[in-house]
Length: 444
Image (cartoon, rainbow, N blue to C red; front, side, top):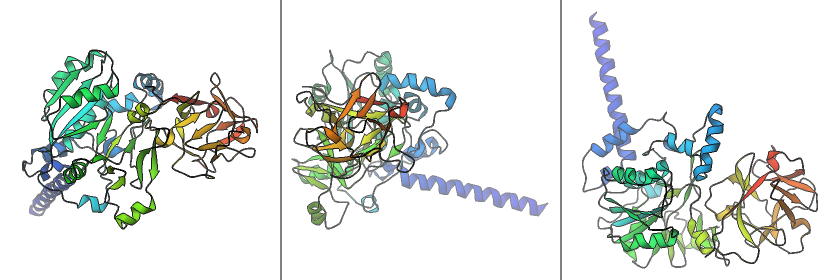
């Protein structure tokens, strides 16, 4: 009997220490607030531990899979905001995300006297869950003394839950949150300017209404501004799938910029920058007067800046080319001339997924056009020659097909042999040959 009691005591003690270990691991790995020298309380860490459950939908950035019996409802809800609203509403407003920073970034230290910031978020008829998840991620993963306030600018939303219900909710948050209401729909830039004029912080940070910040996102941005107040900084932009809300880390070997048509694009870091950084990928990438560091990430339909800066040229319009069967998009993958065009999860951020359908019936990305020289492809990117031929695709807006005129075949989803490259097949009218050209251009 004594031996049995002794075993129970040992097991109980072991269990207690396991729970303590789990708490400490979460405390030191997730709750960056506890690193804040002005807040030594264990309460933020305790809240983080209590709120985390690895089996909850979307935790650690995992994809949310909707059961088959809910698929039709999911598709209907998708139409409201053009992303999987059902999946978003299943995910906690303060869900956990992986820390994908380089090891060198995790160990970097920053000055104690960084400037504080006001965050400005513009929204119009935004979904409740995505807007609140944006706010919670910014609060939970920003050192408290650096985040002075959050300004929400409502660009004439019509949904009731974005009125008093939102005001009552943000009033309970630990960071001051103010809501400014535009009297009429004014657009992203005017709304951001309105928010910027009302800020009180030393630095203004603009976030989109459907993004999530990861740990350590803010300090490196503010550190660069402290070094040079003239610097305009931009973080690495990761991706959250609009279909499953899966978190997908972006590449630190690319930087954002504008081409000569003022379309926003992602470009590979040039060799001269690699040489300047001497192989240290934790250093910022310089792009003119701009510098990139940090790591918040965004969902679909972000980087409205690319739309704002774009303008229609003759009868050319820019689109995201989405496959109906797979809900994935044509993507240039940052590849070069003579390389195959890619196929990837639609992220709605423009960049490598913006293609122009021209008056000459070309599908072009920058100065490269989709080209196929033989039956069944492959579809590659070659310099646009404006002579039609292998670069001529006819889009049927009713059937949603892209007919490659020379081969008389239709653009189709990738084959089993190469799942990352669209192909050509005999036209059959099946869903895999249907493409939605979603307009990505806003005129100014």
